[in-house]
Length: 176
Image (cartoon, rainbow, N blue to C red; front, side, top):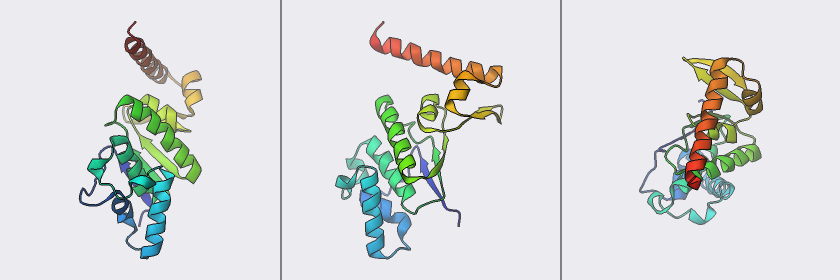
């Protein structure tokens, strides 16, 4: 009865079903024609209409996550829960997909809650971010305010530490 879609890091695929059949799985209550229309619409939204007849093992990890998003959005949920949806992807795919998911959510007008340990993902997708410390929300704010107006030392240090790690990774990637 809760109208919440879910997208996890390791989405539960039905390996014997095609991409289209996986998306259609949550639409069993719709009439066949409406279900087919909705699946087509969702696959077009995530840019995978061409893969409708493919099977999960035949598409890339990034494509699998876009199909998982299509499946989560297909029943038109009131809320979408994204639980570490990109953590099993390579860095380039993760970054690209985070921006794609943000655009899709903005286009469809869906509200989503993203749970992640990856600050870059949170900043790429979210309008508002909650920084947790010892099981409580230390600051709930915009990405800009988290960077420029942290409410306490923990938030400031957390944001800075991640920024320094990202800078080091970029330097090492360039071979300097």
